[in-house]
Image (cartoon, rainbow, N blue to C red):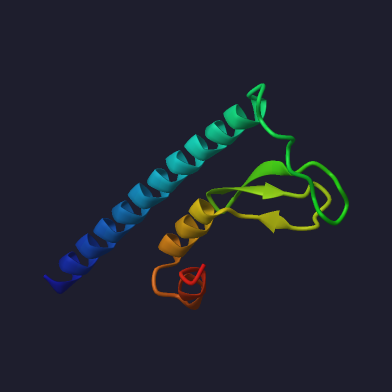
Length: 102
């Protein structure tokens, strides 16, 4: 009986994780579409550039979160919404606690 409960608990945990992954993937996809629409708007400001090399930043998916990244590997830039998504996914970890302060 205990083995059945453990298997059921594992299945529920896996299903919950899959649903969470799907939720964040859809949210990130919507963010990318929104950012692309803003970038393509005629009154949109110039696309941000890397402060180190001056290359135009590209919207990239990193661990399910849309971020601005230097194509030459000089860094990633996150806004408040992206930080909040990462903090939420991290739960009670030290990273979530650090990000909660911003």
